[in-house]
Image 1 (cartoon, rainbow, N blue to C red):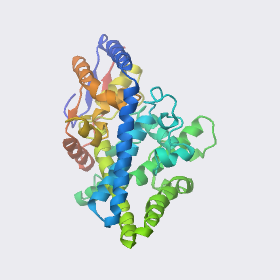
Image 2 (cartoon, rainbow, N blue to C red):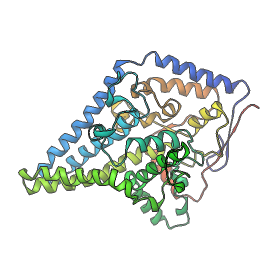
Image 3 (cartoon, rainbow, N blue to C red):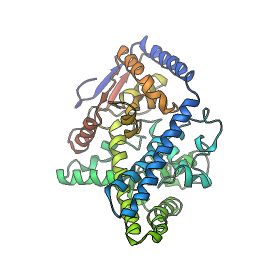
Image 4 (cartoon, rainbow, N blue to C red):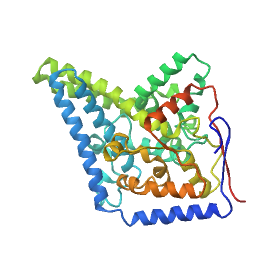
Length: 381
């Protein structure tokens, strides 16, 4: 790669391109032999840990507004989305889950299960259309709705204070101010392309638009149910415990929403954002370029072990996740070193840095006058 402020070129020789793909396929097949019941038990432990955080957080509301309750509730919501829903809806547990609806991508968070599996601002079908397809399949190119620096490019001529404020507000609200409209728009665009009924103006790039923020269907199906349960029903359930408990549940829940958004934004958004993380032009020309884009268009985080991996939502293995999104979470730490060695062997940039440095790089990219570089991938003819 060239410097972060210029267009980058990633070259694969005639021998490298097919060999890279063959070695990645062989490594994936080797990993598959190790996938089994322990992977499901691993996710189940994480899932119940997240539920325990939520339960303890709401129990602590009897103390009134307090930081411990806010953090615990926020961690519970973070776990349900970034750790559990993210991986299950990528079909990572379809096989090891034995067909159990709570661990299968087709049934997870559908119907009544939404209230148990993943009750959030977002709906499972919408999320899969936006994240699994619009983002993963087109990472970094003009169809990817999750290019933070590109999406916020209009702020580059604004004062530094306004750029920082805009980024902070986005981070604190992004699940409902960005992801809600983006995921709803993505599903409708996909439905239109497959022949289902959809409005014509919703078949374009499934990104965020201000006019889509108050979509009536989204408000009725997603936003109002979530807000009614978390900010009305649950506080009212604590009425027998006194006014302080009710007020604590309301305030702690609202603050937990902000904290959970900040947490998830801080570990998700930087994995594809920075002046050293390129964007791409047009479609990937075959599987070789697709694989290279997933590698050079993503960044991993340093890890100190399982606790760090959990707090980072396993986003610390974003390169491996983008190569194999259907891999169970337990496998990513096991395979990361081998993927890095393979990338080094083929001369591919493999970025792994601390989450704090990547947050700084993201802020720098959003606030910089410098254009995010476009990566040219030279493949054999």
